[in-house]
Amino acid sequence: MLRFFIIALGGAMGTVMRYLMGGLDYRFSSGVFPISTFVVNVTGSVLIGFLWGIFDRVAFSSNVKLFIFIGVLGGYTTFSTFSLETFNLMRAGEYRIAMMNVFFSVVASIGAVFIGYISASMLMHAYK
Image 1 (cartoon, rainbow, N blue to C red):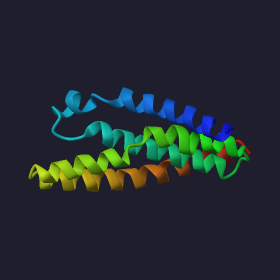
Image 2: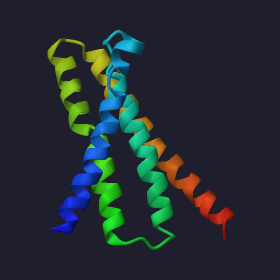
Image 3: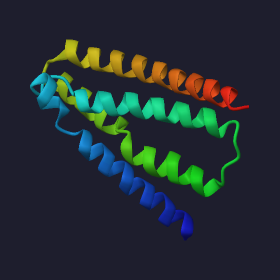
């Protein structure tokens, strides 16, 4: 039962963080490009890569891992929202924007995981 509470608490925190990112779409692209989802996916990818790089080298309890990876980051990242927004762009005939969204989100997120992981590795190496 404790694990469910830990995941739920982390998920609530991640969801609030995601909510705070909302509104970027209209502030920066007049609602044409789903920038807030893009930013959440990329920053979530950097965070997951960075934290994985640390957790790969330092022992943490399974509850801490559940809290961060499933709870916080699971609540924060929005791949399902990304998929729906891309689908809706295609339904609206905005194929070019939809494909830009897919390409940039996927490439940037994979690159962000790499950057996060390398950053954590460098940090952990510096503190040996």
